[in-house]
Image (tube, rainbow, N blue to C red; front, side, top):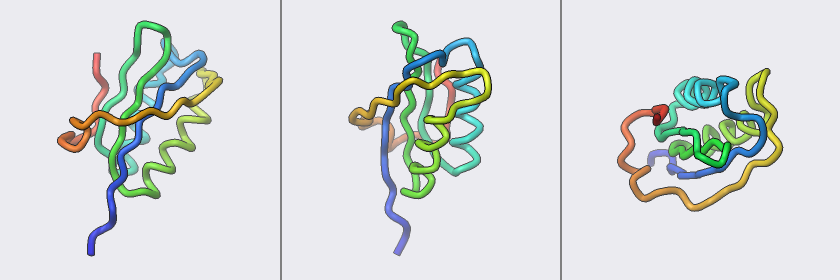
Length: 95
């Protein structure tokens, strides 16, 4: 039997735009074998949606809480992932 896939989505609050946060997320997600996307939102948060093996999704969440060196993550807010996440073929940065 194959490993069960998990979908998750977060809004990342703090100083997370203009500090390489989306690139950090994409590198981390790709290294974990996840699919999905990340994008900046108009309110200054970063949205992340990811799908993959449960341990990989959990590792991404841990990485999101820490962020890259120049970022400051104040809060991670979970929300229901998009249905289209199941069709994602890779992990991309949306502009």
